[in-house]
Amino acid sequence: MDVKKKFPIVIISIAFLLVLWVVLGFEGNELPYVTIQELKELKSSQPGKRFRLGGNIQEGSIVRDSHDQLDLTFVLEQGDESLRVTYHKIVPDMFKEGIEVIVEGYYVNGKFQADNIMTKCASRYQGDLREANT
Image (cartoon, rainbow, N blue to C red; front, side):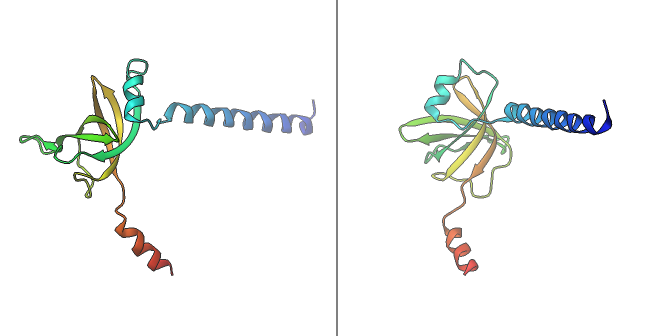
């Protein structure tokens, strides 16, 4: 086989392997966004799997450990559903009761063990951005 015929075959093969590698790599890192109700239904079929869910922090539900200020629990609400969340890291600056958050982590024994918390940006910043762009 001459070099001119081998080159396109090699390029197509490499491209195919790269696409396959990317597709399989991203599939394993996919973090599904679920509701509290879906999470409770999935718990037995997906142990050890990470999930992402969002909701509001229930008023009066934030409890910090008196010995370890990084250790806290709170209740996440989505409509009529609620879920106790545990977390052991520094929380975002805007973290407080009543705000909307997105949590990522594991569902274990009826509790959500978060390893990442993201707060939703306050709406007051939206006006500032619009004014800056005009």
